[in-house]
Image (cartoon, rainbow, N blue to C red; front, side, top):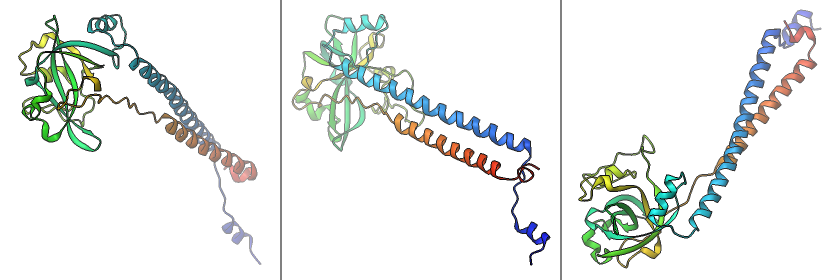
Length: 262
């Protein structure tokens, strides 16, 4: 026969004071609100990113603008990133600048070449495209570096004013190796006046490539859009927390009053 003392030792008891129960609910519902807000924010970001990608896709299929029209649009507050442009000028192949890149699994470089614009003191860097690693030296592909006036089509690209990330190496103008597109760094050592450089770039189109030269058309419109997965994660955590709170409420309701409150 089990004594009352043994029964008391065998029966587990959960005694929570009123203050502790209130604290659990306040903390739980505050956390639930935060998780739902984070999920809703990710849904909003997903809509924004979808709209941005659609805008870029529409923009890159517009007729090319002249440099003057592009600058006028920028002065009016219009974005210039991914806007098609057409321009004419003379390349300074001795001023090539190189960015580490890959193409179809092959290591190499993106070649940025200064282009002195026709009828102007202005110039800008044109990303002519990709060359294999061993063809960095301009002398190895002289046939692909035409002299004289060139007509170029491509996409305008904005130039960042700050390094995109703290883990990204600094540019090394002395070794002519660059990791982020800073006009001031790239202009060091050029015979062209730095104050005449336009503060953006042009990614040359495949049609602007020359036999034996860099392969154009390297622009990649690839903006990460993982907001749906993030939203699902936050909403799933919110659902799990809600279930835990519901089970806690059921536990309280099924316990005798003197067992759930000390």
